[in-house]
Length: 90
Image 1 (cartoon, rainbow, N blue to C red):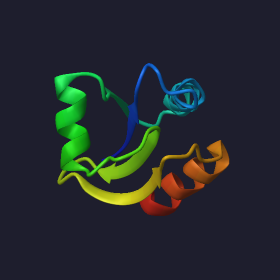
Image 2 (image 1 turned 90 degrees about the vertical axis):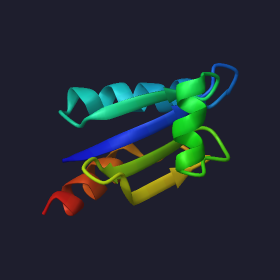
Image 3 (image 1 turned 180 degrees about the vertical axis):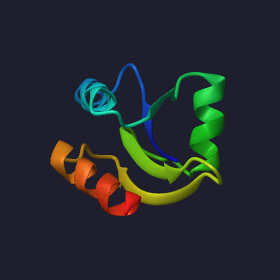
C-alpha cells in the first residue's frame, strides 16, 4: 500500500494550496496522511523523514515507511503526483 504524507504548518503561506492538493488526491482514492508540524506527532514524523521545509509531500510505501518520491518545500502539480503514484503502483 502506498500513502502520501503531507507536512504543513498553519503559518505557512503555501501550505493551504498543498492541503487543497491533498484533499483532491484523497478524492482520487489516494491515501493522504496529514501532519501538522506544529504538533508533537507532526514534528516526530517530520524528524523521522528529515522534513526541513513546508510544505513537504512524500510518497511512501506504507508497509515499511520507505520514501518512493518526494516534493520538499514546494507544491507539485496534481498530475505529477497522480502519474508518480500510478507509475509506482505498476
